[in-house]
Image (cartoon, rainbow over all chains, first blue to last red; front, side, top):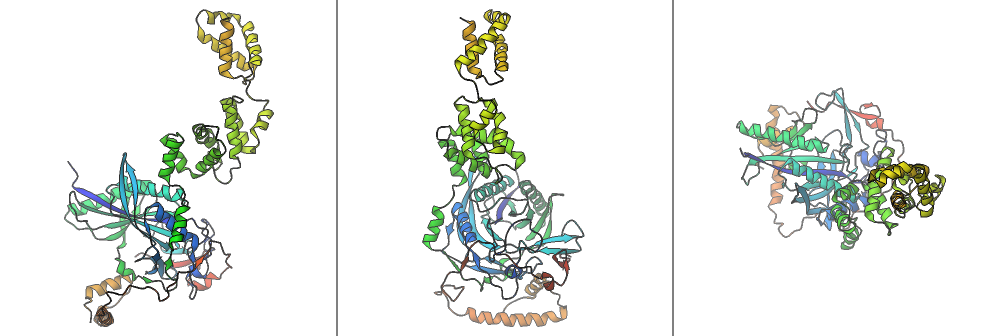
Length: 485
Length: 95
């Protein structure tokens, strides 16, 4: 049976901008500080304290707009959004309403190999609210009172509003994943859904398949993982379908998603915009951006994920899978790029193999490619160079790697400390090969009679006598040459 | 006078978490209708050719560099009707 209803989804994504300070004051935005310590008269909403806009927050909002193909507005205006809630010290949130900083963009998503263009309605800047810690119960519903922490109040956010172009949970998820990757790659957001630096509100409505009119929508909040995006949409689809099938009608409201029960419950009846009594923020003049300023931000834009992906595949010959790993792991990619810069003589593929493989595996338990990594790209590249020149075997390099990470010493020095590198000198190896042959004449006979696999035994003996340093392919050719003469 | 209805008034009362006794609702509705009536007078002005302006000064807002300014230890508890665990304590939110 073909489905009766189609879902129509639009997403509002709140992304915390990666600034050092808040949107309108110099308080730190660092996550995890003691409660109510990153606060000042401005973000506490004290009478008379005036907001001053953060320059880097503006730059980042414009960068996001450029990345999402938006029209950057020469004039945008901050507005007061009035509502009362205990996490909002001023009784209003400074946001943008009629004139946001970016309008009309698009984002291409890929689902099952097909590309679909999703419209971006707008991007506006706003301040975050504080954080409520509900006491006496797990959630807000049964709690007896709440504690307010205002460290997060006034943290800079951009809200990215999509057109209602999404038609399935898979598309919604792909949209958030693609958006997250872009924002992380250009360095405006850290992409952490669990810590709340990226928050997704889902607007969802149902309509009969083939209908052109939209149904009444509900907004689902509290979706804080990719898995819960899928689940929240699935549960809300079923709920709305049941209401419609039983002859009821959908009430426009904001609903809270609960991951434990995978259900949504009503939080409040959805306000319309006019209920917020928006008006221009009298404490802030309009934000005027000149052509020059927009151009300079455009010119300094970091490379976007799809461009990196294409360059890695077409320019460097990496696989799509390896390109995806490097794009996702920003620290790893920076290290890889630093290696490329000092390794014109080595194939990028070889470098990516070592970075994504052995180096990554060793670094994972130690905090990855973060700022604590002392290994210099130059020495790492030198190690790979020693392998390609034959001075080190792959096996020896793998053994040296942990020490290289630990000490960041010149690989030449480490190699000498370990008793030298790989033996690839033919005369030295020939001496060992001849000795092994003279000690194992019975095995030599077997090889001569056609049991060529027995040559591996001789090979093993040579490796043993050379303490694993003999160059294997050279040893094998020497053994065969000696036996056959 | 505006055409604000009793239904609209109920909606506003709900949004603002106010309790207004049924006997006083008529009075409030009438007063609100009067206030909004003034707005209707303004609406009669022809502003088709006037660009909406949010501010009287044609100048960009000042920008601040993104540098942390250390904050003094503020006596926050003096601004809190209830204070607990270095936090503002507020009454039950839902219900």
